[in-house]
Each structure stands twice: as structure tokens, then as C-alpha cells.
Image 1 (tube, rainbow, N blue to C red):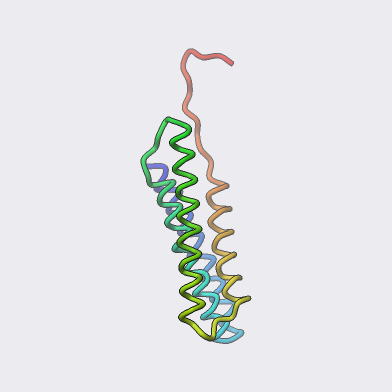
Image 2 (image 1 turned 180 degrees about the horizontal axis):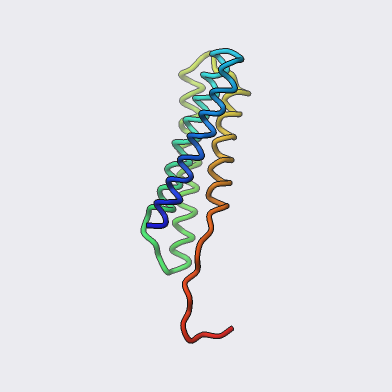
Length: 130
């Protein structure tokens, strides 16, 4: 199924960026690394859910239904990220805001770029000339 391929690409890109971020921040100290990994983990959870809803869900030929699915996935992603960020700031006292935000933003950008660069082949329409 083509949607599952995109879902795998999005999740692989998110995990790859998280690993690169962890390697880079490992040199600067465990507090920065911990904060960045918490932010990246929240980003993977929210963006992974949205990618799953969009790319692994049912395909509708109706444009308004497909648009509703996209909006629902995006709104759900924002709710998940917001709730998890609130929980992280309440539960973790030594969270570095800059490293946390760097992890969250880098994973989110990786997800957006990966999904945006996915190419879709349009079906041929027989007997129709433009």
C-alpha cells in the first residue's frame, strides 16, 4: 500500500533526526540531551499519529472527506503535542527549554519535509482529453 510507504519514510526520518540530535548533544551534557530527547519524543508521538491517520487510513475519493481527514489529523497532532508538552514541563523540573524546543522543532520539520517531498502518481483518465 503506498500510504504505508510514506508512513515508514516519515517515521524513519523522525527517528533519524532524533538519533543525529542525540549524537550532537551527547557532547554538551546529559541535561541538554535529556531535554532534546523529550522534545523529540513528543514530536515523534504527535507527528507519527498524524502521519498514521493520513497515510495509513482509508482513502476517500471525495475531496471534502479527504480534507476533513487532514484537518482532523492535524488538530489531533496539535492536541497530542500540547498535552505532552504540558505534562513534560509539569513533571520534569530540570528541562532546558531551548534544547526541548530544538528537539521538537527538528523532528516536526523532518516530518513535514518528508511528507511534502513524497511524490504521488496520478491515475490516467481514459478517453478524456484536456
